[in-house]
Image 1 (cartoon, rainbow, N blue to C red):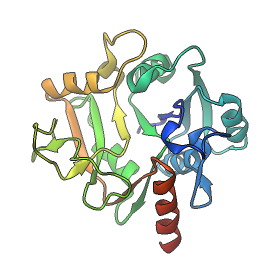
Image 2 (cartoon, helix red, strand yellow; image 1 turned 90 degrees about the horizontal axis):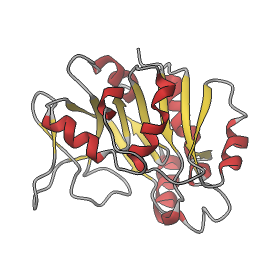
Image 3 (tube, rainbow, N blue to C red; image 1 turned 30 degrees about the vertical axis):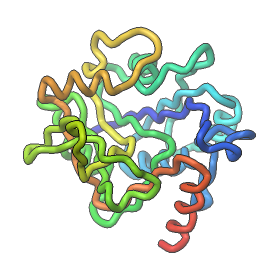
Length: 235
């Protein structure tokens, strides 16, 4: 069982302006709910009991909003001194997970499920003896708000690798993973990207992926937010 999670919520939300002029990006609403509540709802439905949330921009506003939730235990990892990036933010919070594997979710990633719920399936597939990380992958062709060439390639055994230069992949990374703390062993100090840790796990054959049975909605800017609202209303 994976009982803990981290939600990445410390960013400045620059691409979401002007919607983030008066609020942090995790409090931008989509489908009538704040982005961060979409993430927490998924975790609660999967039986996760504790979430650690990193804070920086308009931190008190986010804390005031989250104080209303009683269905999950919430802790905070402050980055008031400086933003630490995707890797540095996780590294600072590691002591809160007691050496056990945990989810990491981006606060701007939501999805619709067509079949088996994603997070419980990831818990079932997680194998700490073989994996340092298990990433959720989304179908790039159906993803809303994503225009990249794909983020990873996956072999028949589930191992992940980087997309070769000039090539494309059918898989986009929607910002959802299970990681073991050893993924961050001997990590750099201060700000850095999780990509450094992923590359090391790829080289060791210990980074895996599983594909979302559904549609990923990347809410990266106001236009994508409007599209996401329309899609959720239609659904």
